[in-house]
Image 1: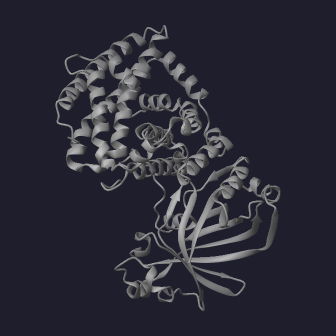
Image 2: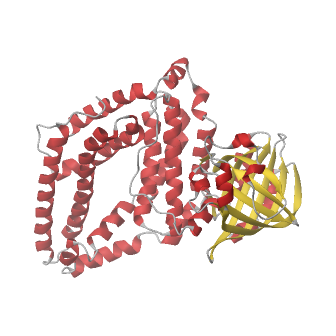
Image 3: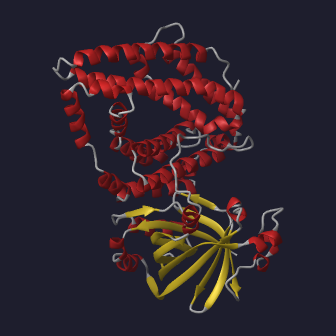
Length: 506
């Protein structure tokens, strides 16, 4: 059995020519192996029983020899893949689960029954070039370049990727080599394996963006440090998933979800400040801030898309004001094109951010400057500190949105960031509490945030209208003022109810 420690990168054809030179400059000694054509078939049952257990079963034939491989459930952190792997020689084309060690399977798995139901789900066919890189530190890193395709049900998906696997030595060396690769443009860290992409293709289930950030899965016996790890891992995966979603279907909403994931990571550093020193995350926090600043235009783009949709009530009003339409069109023309947005996700700066977050998490870099107080805080059960953190947020909201004072639209807009920050605390730690009470309590707050988003749209449209001298806009401004007043009245009712609820953590 081997446990893979590898990084995956999606690269363009233009990057391929740079790889041999890059490897040569990095390594002390390079062994270049002959290229091979690898034919692979992936098997499962009609009910996808292996997939449900996160087990991958593959047969591979090359140069007249075949083997079967099992990859068990592992861990993926920011492109770093770690999965237990078992390889067994195969005499024919059909795999045999009973040829693997009996002790590797999850408890209760019906090996014999599954074995009889196996059939090929999809295949991969690619040319693999392989280099073994020996470093000055004595590490050995296998670098492979795969070029080919995944095929399923008559459909095909291109493969052009680089994998780096640490065969022996120091994990820092594989990260150092990765940093060299991502200096090239048109490179991205890969979250999804060939098998995962093959299943999506075979089952006609393309990757879909989430509707929102969900709760980070935590358990009550976790320590504060384990909760930190879970929150960071969730945030990184969320960002990478929606990066891939954007490449497959470029939407503003997907970019906003990436921003939400970045905000969750930033918030995690703040939430666990008892064990994560600010100095240790200063560079990361600056880069996360850079990302949010780079995409700060997205919210405005979503607002424009909202009030220019023919399905929306705003459209009829705007269509009667040509000068406002002209301004909106100018704004649309100024925002980045899809190609330039994708170029950001293939840039050294963005990929260095994802790689730095991965390194920080895998190496537990927050421990480097730990004091005895930090160690003690890290060992506390997260359930024991969660209620105190929520109580602190709740008291803050009582101050920012006092029950005894009527709030205006501008009051709500001014507190949007603070309210979203408090909801991020719930996303990080909310799974520790009973779901019914938790969701009942949080639901009205989400309604208020949605209301603030709509207020933002109305305010944006109002400001654009005020910049024009068109007489036709006078009626629009009156209409916008009335819409704003009605919306604030509804939000005030929700706030009154919400602030009188008993918090779910008490």
